[in-house]
Image 1: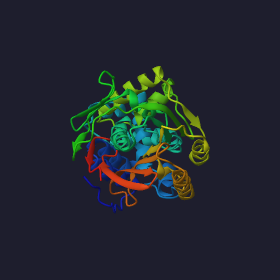
Image 2 (image 1 turned 45 degrees about the vertical axis):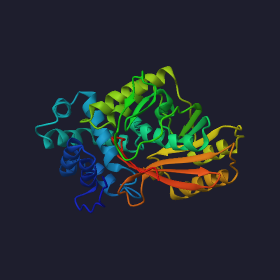
Image 3 (image 1 turned 135 degrees about the horizontal axis):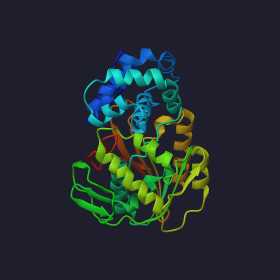
Image 4 (image 1 turned 180 degrees about the vertical axis):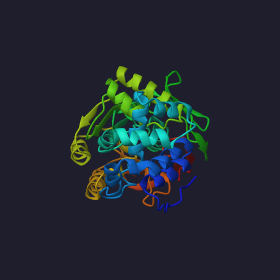
Length: 347
């Protein structure tokens, strides 16, 4: 399923509503459309959204707003708003207009921080890409993740997967993923993770209650299975804390790639829905650093780069993999933004 370029004149929240509806969430779309109609009740918030610096779509402004409103509903002290989110029906404009009138400052404050969904469903596509790397090299894997948030996807070796009937990972894990699969079968086999480390400008602590609330607020309210999966992944992370450093991605990656790579280990740099939040110079710098490290790779010290990101036109999410030596890039799949389906080509 591809997303067509959007040309919506009614504002950024209305544009975000179109994206949400295309991604299968009519409730979030209805929320954002009502919020667009009611924004006049929060003039400063309206001005902030209309004057957002840079590309508001790339900054996920509508999703920031939706997360803020969901957080208010989860707080529970605005009864009409909480009821709307519980029943997902009835009057949308009244409760949302009231929230905008009373809590515009809180919504604006929430929106200043980039979204940190830490969507665990994307791990299924990353694991599918790792099977391709394993087919080539059959080596244990060292994971390096950019934009790790709470680090939940660094624990991808602790989850279970059904990828088009191919079972991978831990069959007894409380986190099981079975995205709708379209395309040829991948090759089964163990994914041996020997090390995993990530970076984020603002790492989230899975053991912190406020962190859990923030992450759950970013899960769309009409997708309870995603919320349950996130809750289970957070519980696993409390038992197996992922290592996430507080640093900017470019300088951190430069340090990691400069570290000696053990012979017989495949080093994998990966990221999911992160590049859109980086500046163009940082994106270019990261590419240059990875390509430079790739030029030093050998058959016994290979380097793999996996990306799960919007294409430049933001019409589809692509799963890509580049492997060195050689530097061949494979366009492996088109994916749902939150991992619900994978259209696999493996090309």
